[in-house]
Length: 205
Image (cartoon, rainbow, N blue to C red):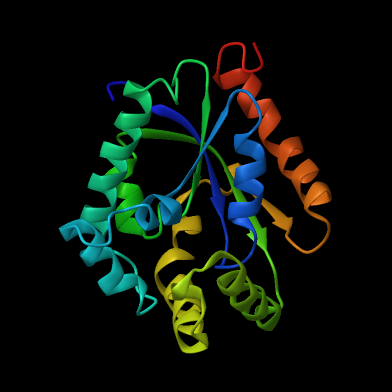
């Protein structure tokens, strides 16, 4: 990856709906959604990297920064090599990375962050229930244990929330994440379409 990748970050607490919105946006021509949670969960659980991921995720902890960023770089390069992601004509939507200030420092030589979409929800209990329901529906053991869920919120506020302060606040768009997914999607598109049109060639061509 020689040139910086034009990127929009989907940001917010666990369970706030980043994955739902990212998947919808990723189906739009010109947008490529990359969720690091899916990336890690797709690992062979018996592999060394898979075992390392489970060691942290089952406790609600973050995978170490350098390991996360190294795997991310390899994964993105794989998408480029297989033509699933074309940096010249696609906008990269990152969901779940960077999750710490150290991660953004490592990644900033690879990505050009055009906009940060900060999905917000003040009702943490609603997010807890949403995640427990998601665990049942999607078979995600890391979302089933309420103690693990609450530890993930604690980790978010201590380690991930400060990432927002790293960016020029003019690039951060706050969007309330309660409501119909279609309404939230429209608000996100209103924020990122101007960036997409300026950043990439023929995003819908």
